Length: 383
Ligand SMILES: *Cc1c(COP(=O)(O)O)cnc(C)c1O
Image (cartoon, rainbow, N blue to C red; front, side, top):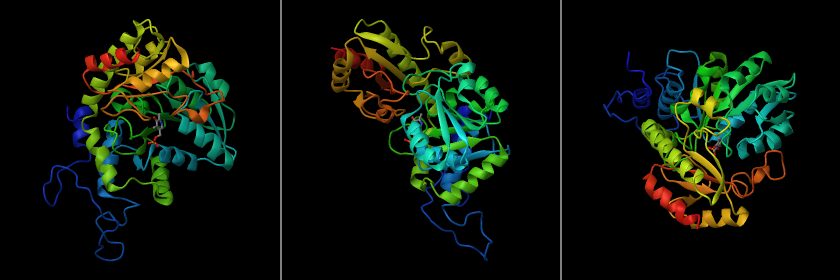
């Protein structure tokens, strides 16, 4: 059986040629409603908040890539953004429930948990989840969700997913893995024991910085049905055009990720070897504390590299102002390289908290341009 390899599923899962025309690309079904033959008698589609064929194709594709086939338990719900997916995890919880977060969680995740969920009676603890003791120390007898990002953003710490899954199981909590940084091509958390995988498809899945989206994939049928219910009841669905953009982006995910990983590894080594750079964070460096776990649970180390220049805050600011190929912008995971200072941009909302990152940390989202050009750009910007 070779038809279930990742690259093949990315192009074929949920994407049969259109039955009426033979179109090989799933059409953008720009329709809100569907004609019925008789009340309640229809072709499986009633109203596009509930289901839309372009979104269905995307959901089948993403589920397949996280290891959940069409005849398996579970599935995918696509959402209008990664944060809409995170909000939906919140809808699964009740007042009194508790969430464990990594202490360098994505800023928006930290914000929704601490500012929004907290107002609904859900408490939280942020901790170092890179050790089993750290995960256990953060849990309480009310813990309902252990939230893992691996690699984390922007310090690229690695959490052992199988270990986190054991702790979650022991305390009756769900393990949710935000798999945005790795993408399913490099890491498949459900196979390692996670209950739900969350994505910001804005990043590597879409891959071209031209749309915002999210998804939750689970291999638990009850959870999937609950999420499907919530998707329809709360309505944070991606439109058909956005669904199409992610569906199209994912077709080349494997090709892009290979290049992102290749370029990022070369850039991390260039930075390590450069005296103008103080520290480098990349899980593919054998000196990185997460290296061996990353090597076990990932098939590549990803496209994000963080570093601190030897010169402090002013040096960081002048580097990000001087690159030409690396655009100074938030976000990550697109074909074009981006550079930013998390403390001033993506991670502003964690200033003054335990989740704070070094103020002169520079984060690179290494794109798929030629690596020599990217290294020249950084070399010039380092001054
Ligand atoms: C971007 C991002 C999110 C949020 O996704 P949006 O699509 O921006 O709403 C969540 N987690 C991680 C790791 C991200 O990078």
